[in-house]
Amino acid sequence: MSELRSGQVAAAAGVNLQTLRYYERRGLLAEPARTLGGHRLYPPDTVALLSVIKAAQRLGFTLDEVAELLDTGRRRHPTADLRQRAIAKITEIDAKIADLTAIRAALTDVLDARCDSLTHCTCPDCPLPLLTIGTTERPHGEPA
Image 1 (spheres, rainbow, N blue to C red):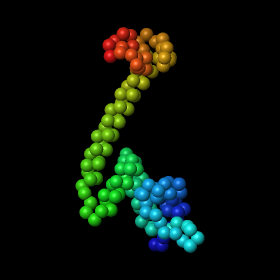
Image 2 (image 1 turned 180 degrees about the horizontal axis):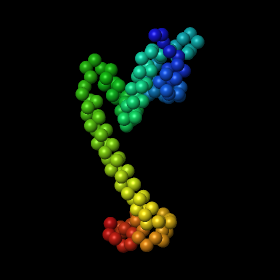
Image 3 (image 1 turned 30 degrees about the horizontal axis):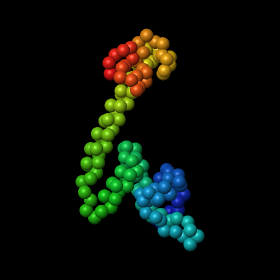
Image 4 (image 1 turned 120 degrees about the vertical axis):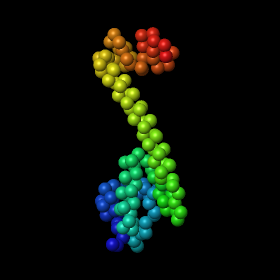
């Protein structure tokens, strides 16, 4: 298969042209060859590489982390770095899940109590933690 122009790569990988150029600037993609007219020409495996990058992002890796993983994989003797990074990412995701679960529970309490304001709620058992920001007491005189 011959080299592909920017539009062909973007379409095949399901990304836009700005994403393609941004990944080039970030070093995720090697700078492509150019035609005499200045058009970028990418090797066919660029589409597969873009798929790998997007898949890693869906798994929760940042572009910095993806760049590091790609760099590790490009070495002749790659390390077992992916396993360690995956374990660290799972720990990070578990912490985010715990935070989101706590936020969901707090919002459910707010709905159940029928709170009517973030700052001057008049419901009898207001669960809003926002009322205690910057104070040492919780709503209704409970200690922090």
